[in-house]
Amino acid sequence: MTYVIGSACVDVMDKSCVQECPVDCIYEGARSMYINPDECVDCGACKLICRMEAIYYETDLPKDQQQHLADNAAFFNQTLPGREGPLGAPGGATNLGPVSIDTPLVAALPRRRSREC
Image (cartoon, rainbow, N blue to C red; front, side, top):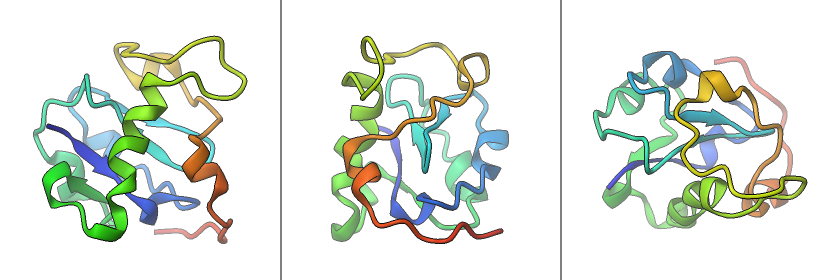
C-alpha cells in the first residue's frame, strides 16, 4: 500500500509534500511529483501537508483519479522516454534530483498555467 499523487499536482508542483516526507520518496518529474511505492512508509505526512489536496491513500483514490495509481508506479518501474532503464528505488529523491520527464499519462494531459499555492 502507498500514497499516490493525482492530477491536481500536474503543472502546479507545490512541493510542500517533499519537505514533509521523512523518507525522501517524492520525486520530481517535468510536470508532476511522484511517490515511489517501494520507498513510501505510508506515514501520511505528505497528504496532511498537501495544499492542493492531490495526495490520496491508494484505497481512497476517487474514481476519476484511479489511473494515477498505476501511473505513479510506472514512473519508477517502466523505462521512461530518454532513459536507459527504470528508475527503480534510487534511495531518495534529493540525491537523484529532478528527473525532468513524466509518464505518458501526465505528459499527454493538457497543459495548464502553473499556479502558486
